[in-house]
Amino acid sequence: MVFYDNLYVSPRIRKPRQIKKDLLRGKGHLSIYVLLLAKGPEGRPQLEIMHCANLQTQYYRVHEPFIVGIAEGKADAVDMVDALTTESFNMTGQWNAAEYLASRAGFEG
Image (cartoon, rainbow, N blue to C red; front, side, top):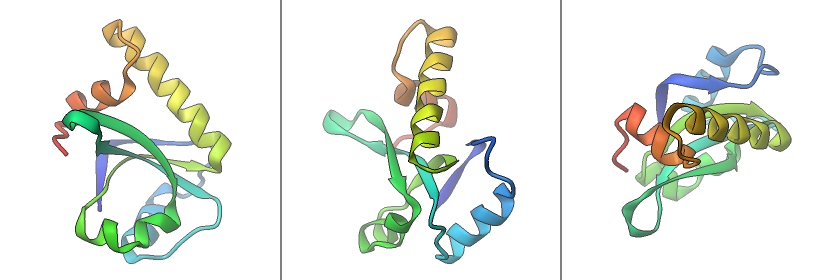
């Protein structure tokens, strides 16, 4: 599991360092969702929202996830994607938050 250096953290998250440690140890949280960059169709980056429990599946043990954000609840995660999309547009003139984050983070999938 790799965390983006400039990890986006929901304002409702009180102890982001502890949550990161817990996720790395395989400990789950009922209300924590993560935003991750993944390689999508045609090799292009895509931004995904998932519950942190999904990180414990066999797939993510083999394919290391690249986490760009942590949120308290699904609605909070959706709000975070909205904010990232707006940031992407303001910085690049494009609405593609996944490509914006991938270029900033050096993500290659």
